[in-house]
Amino acid sequence: MASQTDRSASVSRETSETNISVTLSVDGSGQADVATGIGFYDHMWTAFAKHGRFDLTIRAAGDLHIDAHHTMEDVALAVGQAFNEALGDRTGIVRMGDALVPLDEALIQAVIDISGRPFAAVDLAFIGERMGDAPTEMVAHVLRSFATAAQITLHVRMLAGANDHHVAEATMKALGRALDAATTLDPRIAGTVPSTKGTLTT
Image (cartoon, rainbow, N blue to C red):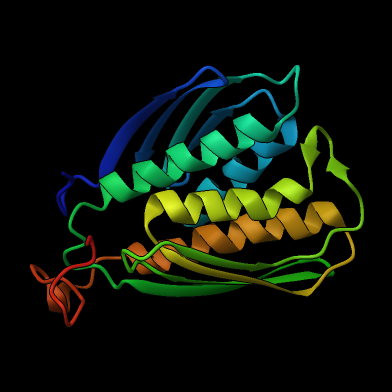
């Protein structure tokens, strides 16, 4: 289990459809090394890490000859699991965070509660079917998969947007910034869990 001084984790996930490894440091500087075989998906996670100040390495080999679904889903699950493990018992964290991120005409809001209760409400609208090799319909599924594995409550809303690339990128930036805020350690509550029930993991 992670401590306040070492909030990092490594996760491997191997199925008949994908083989994925993730290394994460919550208290990083935004260094990303991502290779999923899906160019735009690499871009999404790189933006997430850069703006969340997380150090993130992802290696994924999946059944892309079928489509991108399994790879995108399983990477999101593995990154979410890494966050869940890196945060340990959640001692001393702010717990809740939000971000409002523009990218030209796009404006995305992300709100997070590291609650131990997996839930995601995602309201995004895309115009096209794909961004490079990444299906636009998978963006919401990626967010839900991540929230489930990370054991967080996540709300994402598109307040404006007309360019699919901008909407998806601003979404990942907002997710990163909100999660950075929520995972920040608050010295006023060092050694305690910010919950009236005393736990954020059950």
